[in-house]
Image (cartoon, rainbow over all chains, first blue to last red; front, side, top):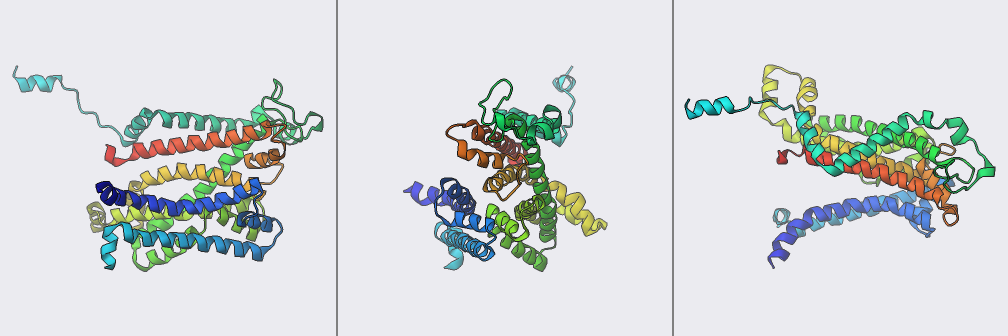
Amino acid sequence: MITRKHALNNALIPTVTVIGLEMGTNLGGAVLTETVFAMPGLGRLIVDSIKNQDTPLVLGGLITFAVFFSLVNLVVDILYAFIDPRIKSQYK
Amino acid sequence: MSVSEEVIKNSKPYKKQSQTKEIWRRLKKNRFAMLGLIILIMFVLLSIFADFIADYKEVVIKQDIKNRLQPPSSEHWFGTDEFGRDIFARIIHGTRISLYAGVITVGIGLIIGTALGAVAGYYGGIIDNVIMRFLDILLAIPNILFAMAVIAALGNSNLNLIIAIGLANVPKFARIMRSSVITLKDQEFIEASKAVGASNYQIIIRHIIPNCLAPIIVQTTLRVAFAVLSISGLSFLGLGIQEPVPEWGSMLSGGRRYIRDAGHLAIFPGFAIMLLILSLNLLGDGLRDALDPRLR
C-alpha cells in the first residue's frame, strides 16, 4: 500500500514524461520499420509520397503525426495532475 | 616536538586540483566510458586517414561487376557489394561522412540553441515567451519526421539534410541552456558583476555560459549519436545522402535485397552504425556521471 500510494506516484512522474517524449521518437522509428517490413502504414505513405513529390499528402501525413504527438503530450500533462499531488493542489 | 608540530611536518602540501583534471580523473575510473572513448578515437583516426587506407575514386566508387557479391576474403576483408566495390573501404569512407555530418549538425544546433537559450533565460519576459513558443513548434514534430518535411520542401541534397537535422537539434540545447541560465541569473556573483558595471553581453559570455557548460557537453555527445542515427535512417529511406557516396544507411538499404544470399552486405554497415552510436552513448553517459556536481 505504501509502495502503491507513495513510491509509485513519485516514480511515475519522470516515467510518464519519458513515455510522452519517446512516443515522438517511436513515430519516427515507425517510418523506418514500416519501410523495412513493407507494412501498409502512415509512415510508409509519407516516405513514398516524398519520393513521388506529392506535397499535399506529405503535409497531411506530417500534420496527422504532429497532432497525434501533441495529443499524447496533452494526456501526459493531464496525467500529471492525477499522480503528482503538488500539481493536483493547484487545480482543486 | 609537540604533536601539532609533528602533524604539520608530516602532512603533504595542499595541491590545487584543476577542474578539468578532476573531471578527467573521474571519467577514467568509468570503464565503459573509456571503452567508448577508445572506440570513438579509433573511428576518428580511421576517418582522418581514410584516403591513405583506400583511394576514393579507385576503390570506393569504381564498379567492378565481375567481382560482385564476393564473401569476405583475404583480398576484400568485408567482401564486395552488388556492384563489386570493396565494403571495407566503403565503410571507412562512410565513417568520415557520418562523423562530419553528425558533428556539423550538432554544431549548428549547439551554437544557435545555446545562443537562443541564453538570451531567453537571461532577459526573460516577452523575449523568453516568444522564443520558447517558436521552439515548441519545432519540438512538436518528431526529429526524423521534421527532417523528412524539410527535405520534401527544399529538395533532396546534402545541405538540406544538414540544415534539417541541425534545426531539429536547436530546441533541445535551447531548453537546457535556458533552465541553467534561469537558475544562475539570481546568484550573487552575477549581481556583483552588474554592480561593478559589466554589460549584459559580458556577463552572459564570461560568467553565465561557462557555468552552464556541463549539461551542454553531455547533450552534445548524445545528440551526435542521435544525429548519426537520423542520417543513417534517412539515407536508408533514400532521402538523405545520395548514391554513390558510401553512407552506411544507403549501404544497408542496398544490401537489403541480398540479405539471404550475401548477408555481409548488410551486417557490416549495420555493425559499424551500432558501434559508433554505442561508443558515443557510453562516452556521453560517462561524462554525465563525471560532471555531476552531486557526486563531488
